[in-house]
Image 1 (cartoon, helix red, strand yellow):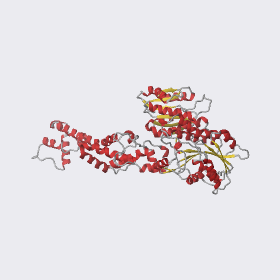
Image 2 (cartoon, rainbow, N blue to C red; image 1 turned 45 degrees about the vertical axis):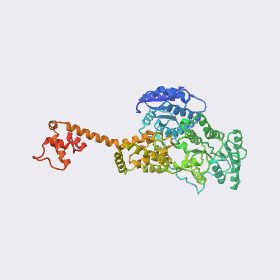
Image 3 (tube, rainbow, N blue to C red; image 1 turned 120 degrees about the vertical axis):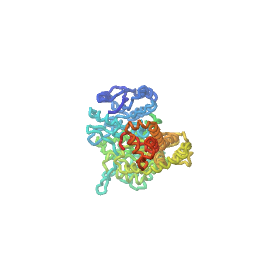
Length: 640
């Protein structure tokens, strides 16, 4: 049972599912503090609403029911609105000073297998919360709990499973609860697709629609389709694309000498697009949704406008096309999503949410018999939304290696042969990626990838650092009052080196690491360099627990020196106390003989002879030579 009181956030409108769930939570022993909130509150308004509840120090966790479907509503659920409501909640909790972890509930937003319930529009919309939550896990750290998907009819057993997950004991933060138990989310290597005599299972032919087909990854998909046999490409463009890109694509397609025709229209011109799709005598055979828009902004800086813009580019067109082509016998409906929707990314809240909705849309289409597939992409060397040279260089440092167009299209050619619902195509340097990614918060998602597990294991500090710590302690004790100055120079030098600066001037003593430009990768490299320099086992959350160099110095000094100082003080206290005990009291207590025997053992010689000092003098002398732990254990009852 989760400890403490739990703040449960619900919409203001009543609903049978939400009300019934609250009753079951109470019936199973959870101390529930319900908080109903109005729709459309701003961040500040919601923060004030929550503030009164958060003054209770006993709030141990926060549970959001905002994304659960309202069975009384008849209109189409809005994925962007669901994203905004949960995003506003996350922002408001931070503004109100909440420290308890937030868990978000959905129902049917994810699938655990082919026998799972068929996804409807409400389930597809809820998937946005999962994409948003994966970004929140990286930005909110300890203030984020996780994502839990409920079954269609949550019974008592499901609620007990829910309570078990909320304890946090399992360490899982992305789970689906079904009648068969608790299912966890894992990333696994895709098997190599089995071809038939070297031929594709799907060979592009006839007319293929490619959204965003004149730029970025969409351009390479268009060229691949033309080479593979598509006779007509209908390419959509956005207002952000220069007009000459379509002409440039036509020129490249013409050079392939395949006779492929390229037609285009604006993505926003629905009538023109519908006319091209339903052109007489040229039936549409496949859709490739490659239109993209990446906006990078931290959760606290993301608003309704950013969410709306990303969803308009990534989600709205895909949903509209799925409806427009519902009666067509398509061979393929492929959507390009992103790794931001698979495992999250800092500054990718809206983008991750939109891509997660695309993945859920594919699940719904497959349930309707459409041969749909979601392909989540990593980075490409040439083009793509937000992919300038600086961004590509940063991705390389983070372990996401940009792929060449040839590599990407070869992987695409393999992926479409398989019947897999969701595939990730990315070139990863796991040793560079996984350690920073999991530095401040573990991610069980990667547990089934051998390369990731090996990289994490290799990054663990070995037992060979004790000598380094001992040497540093000796040096610090020798300089006395200069200890802080030496440690501060060490910390600032290591931090500056991580940031790419020379000397120790790259960061001020009282400057916050995040203000100086630290990200998760820098935090890991800084921690690892200090482990090497000090020999200490430092926590992965070092710069979050100690946000400035001065705070790190205080932590290092306590770890290096205070434990030994405490032991010295303890030994001195014990010796002083024993020296103050009269001889007769030691004798009456029956410990004198034990003390004298211990003194002989420590001195390596026999007890004093008859001509030597008497027992009282011997008792005084032994105080100065006893090991304190042995004295306490052996003299006070543990045997001689």
